[in-house]
Amino acid sequence: MTRGYATPVGETISDSTDWRSLVADAVGNFIEFWGFKRNHGRVWALLYLEGRAMTASEIQDALDLSKGAVSMITREIERWGVARRVRSPGDSVWRFAAETDLMAMIGRVLREREASVVSRVKADLDEAERLAKRARVDKATIDRLARLRTMAQLAESAIDLFVRTAQLDASNVMRILTAPLRVGRK
Image (tube, rainbow, N blue to C red; front, side, top):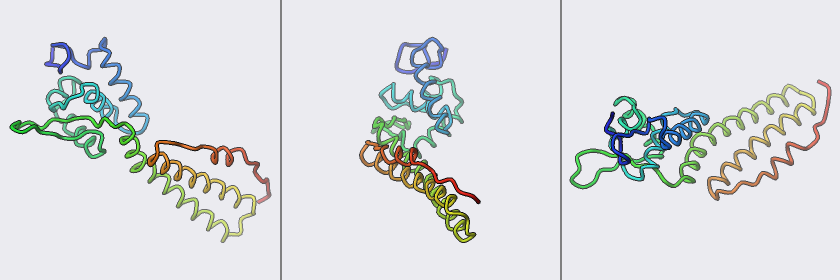
């Protein structure tokens, strides 16, 4: 068996009967759903559960990953700010520790990734509406475009509010979603 990590000797997180394996896989699956690589979530979950900084070799053994994969993953999760590289005085080996402020992590991802997508969508919808008006598209279609743009603006505001306050007010979204549409001819 591999060296494992600070839990029972001889066990690794990749042991399928281990509760830690279930946590790592669950977080990995969730992270993959968000568009990241599954092993990013598994490595972060391991570091978070362990509660201490771990060497690349310990991560490699615990998750049954290659040295190259651990190197790539730790570099990427550092860049996203979900883990940090640490070295104790007198220690020659870098270790990796998980970010434990979950709101800070979620906020960073929302701000850096989702907010930029929403911003691009909003800009595209602004341009589409401008072009549609110039092409003299009917008022009902322009209204639908404006409604989509408003949804993008609300999403942008919601992300900003959530990142700043960890609160979300969806009342404006419900107003837009339930408002009647004008039906017109093209």
